[in-house]
Every structure is written in C-alpha cells, then in structure tokens.
Image (cartoon, rainbow, N blue to C red; front, side, top):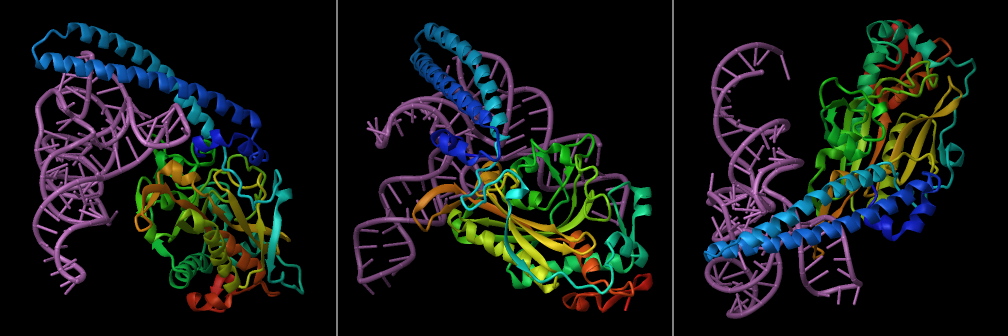
Length: 430
RNA sequence: GGAGGAAUGGCCGAGUGGUUGAAGGCGGCGGUCUUGAAAACCGUUGGGCUUGCAAGAGUCCCGAGGGUUCGAAUCCCUCUUCCUCCGCCA
C-alpha cells in the first residue's frame, strides 16, 4: 500500500510514475474519496470534542451534587449526530482502502519504462548455452525416460500440473534444497527459517497477495487458512506489527518451503513438464533493510541468487523488469533467467524485488533508530528473491547436463551432495 | 474436542463506570554530584489520524471487533492468542 499522505501531496508525480501500471482514473478516484473522507473525519472529531466537553460537565455537576440533566440531554443529541456521521466515515474508509488496495507500488527511478515484458532490459549474461553434438531433449522426455519423473501417476493421485519425482530425481530435488540453504547460510550470511506452509488472510494481505490476487491461491475450505504461494509470505510477516532496532538491520533470512499456486488463468501456458506446477519447491531469500540501504541490498540479494547458478555452472541472464512487468508490490525487480535447451530459451528461475515500504506499511514492520537520536519508528524496507526455484533448477540441470547416451552428469558442486557423478539409465546414481 | 483461567505502555504491575493516556516499580534518555564510574537525587520517557506554515489544537488507541451509556481500561456479546486439566495424537 502506498502512503496516502504522500500520494495526496505528490499526486501529479504519482500519476506520471504509475502510467505504465494503472489507469489514471483510479488515482482521481483516490483523490476525491480522500478529500471526502478527510472532511467527514474533521467534522466528526469536532462533534466528539463537543461530546467530551459535555461529559466532563456532567461529571463535574454530579460530583458537586448539581443537576446534570441539561448537559446529559445535549450530550445525547450530539451522540446521535456522531453515530449518524460515523456510518458515512466508515463507508468512506472502506472505499478508500478499496482503492489503495488496487494501486500498485511506484516504480523506482531506475526501473525501465514500458508496459510489458517488451520493455525489459537485459543487464548481463553469464555462461554460454551448451553446444550439443546431438539434439537435446526436453526434461519431460528425458526425465520420464530416466525414470526420475512420473507425470501419469501424479495425474492419477492429484491431477494436471503435478509431478512425482522418483529415485535419483527425488534425491536431486532434496539435495538441491540442502545445497542452496548451505550456501546462503554458510557463505552469504542468511539465517535459516522453517515457517508454516499454511498462512492466514492477514499475512497474505501484509505482503500484497490479498485482496487483489486471491484467485491465484489455494484456500483451505471452511477455514481462514491458505496454502502459502511463496515463503515470502510467512517469512516477511515474521516481523509484522513489530518495531525492530536500526542496529539489527539488515536482517537476512532464507527459508525452504513448497509453494502452492492455483495457476488460474495460465491454462495453455507451460503445460509440459515441471516448469509451471501447482506445487513447487523453493528456497527463498528475504531481507529487512533500512530505507537508505535497500537498493544496495537488492543488488547483493540478486548476486546471492546468481551465485547458486554460477556454482551449478548454469548459463543465465539478468533482466531488469519494466515498470509494467514488475509485480504489484515491487518498486524494482530483477529476473534471473536460466537457459533451457529443451525449450531453446531463457526462463525465469528467480525474481528479486525491492518492495521499499509498500509491504511494511501493510504489515506494520518498523524500526527505530535510538542511537541517531531519532526515537520515531519508521517503516522498514522489505526485499525478497528466489534463491532459487528448486524445480526449475532441477530441470535446468537435467536439460543442460544431458549426455548423448541419455544420462545426466551431476554438476561438480552437487557431487558431494549426491555422492555420485551421473544419473544413469534407470535413474541410477553412479 | 471438553472444562477452567488470563490478555493493561519497552518490561513488571495497579486500576470494576466520571480530569486515568492510564498509579507504582524496572529499564531508557537528560541532568546534579564525582578525577571517572557506581550509588543517590531531580527531570523526562508510546503510537495512529485530522487540522495548522509552524507553535499548537483536536480525536482515537488498555488483545481484536461490535454493543450498552450523557460518559467505558472498567458492564455485555463475538472472535483471537496464551496458560492449566481431561481426551486424542506424530
């Protein structure tokens, strides 16, 4: 959520900077509703002030044994007026937050202009797509042939967009999680969190998935529980409603969780293989930072995610998303895209964003800088990025490291984890 | 799942309808004293919103949301969380 006061005072600037993200009409609605609300609030507070004075008068009269009937009558009348106006304020409040809830974050000045992915800017490229002496297979063929991936049985027990990993395939997924967590905790200075995989509405509201994107989520029937769509939700909300001290920032957390997404509206997209699933595993990086340091922290967070790709020797590129392609709550986002030989294209494997105070304002994440003599709590900046999406890393390895004989070489960095050099026919680790 | 109990400011803890945004203590900050520190003493010490150039003024907040009342931290209802006991369970 944007700061309504800032939006009011910088209205024209906001309109300009949000031009790729939202209809200007919505911002006009904001201004109207905000004006109406504020005049209603001013009016109601004047009435309340009057009532408080009358109540004090009653108290004084009763204490000295005088008749208080007149003041009580007047106070009662004022009370009736307040009640009436309160309903108006309540509905204006609801209207205003309804509007604020659909206004996306203001793009950072370094975010490229553009209304969709055509405005994205490639920042860098690392590694080269492997040169195959044979026609590389997509993982949905190779994985099934190796017996490490089973879609048919997954469809039987759950449905489309689910996969069963078997043998070396299951172990590869599990060890990738270990590897990523180890690198982030031991080399990059993150603390590991194992959060609930189920969250409540309030948490989803705090990070911005609700109220606008409920259709993308799985809700547990008859409860206020939702399957978490990303570890961003439980981990960012870890400090919801808390005031941190400036000295402990930045706080760097990493978490493994499965992520559950309904993928409503993505029918026909990435239908083959495990690129887009209802459940996928992910190692997430989350940071809480001081406002003045958050853009440096975005660079280092992105570098931490890139480091996993480099250690696995997977070719990738780094892309700055355009204003229109950046997600709702983010002010700036880098996507890391890994090369997939089966698809013959780069595909998103990590999305690293700085949300500035957009999530912190909703979730109530503050910090206080006592040392600097500033005792007033300010909103922290929140950031996150995948470090990495495990399922997509799995398939990137299978496709990039495939051999002419149909086996898959294990990346050097993972060999100690898998205690093997190759995934051979029949899904055997050798 | 059943039966009880609890929730007050950074922390502990008073407060059962009328200057209580909230006693007292601890902690924090500033000061006096001291070569310095400690102790002692004095002072100070939450946040949101509205309004105002500002100083200030107003309003709301005692787990959350409703209600009763001229007036609610105090009374009533619903919910949440925590604790104890019983049941079940990895």
